Length: 141
Ligand code: 5GP
Image (cartoon, rainbow, N blue to C red; front, side, top):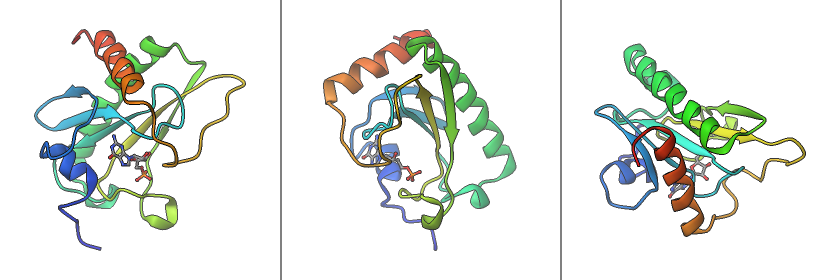
């Protein structure tokens, strides 16, 4: 499959649809998942067009995982979860639904199961508040 320039994350990168952004640099963007599986579920994407792990140059993957760690530290500070899961899916058979590579940062809370993947939209004001908490933890309110 070739990269679809109209996938939803490409459109977010172009500013065509809104997102609750928490971090951006020249190579990377992080924002709230609109259908979070847990409180604080955040996505990190590269700005280069790459569908999955196999399309990304090692240097770009290096930058992506470094920013993912930085944002994960802020998510941990903002939400104080009991644990934190990183997820990254390659191909529809593996559960990928948006074909622009991304890492999921999913805080985990004891006694709280994960909500279904890509199922239920969160309240917009709640996502805005969560994004603000993460930006504050990053020192970028
Ligand atoms: P994948 O299944 O490809 O690993 O994950 C795609 C993720 O993108 C899902 O967790 C889904 O909730 C999220 N998502 C889908 N559409 C949108 C959108 O328009 N905005 C945001 N912020 N997240 C989205």
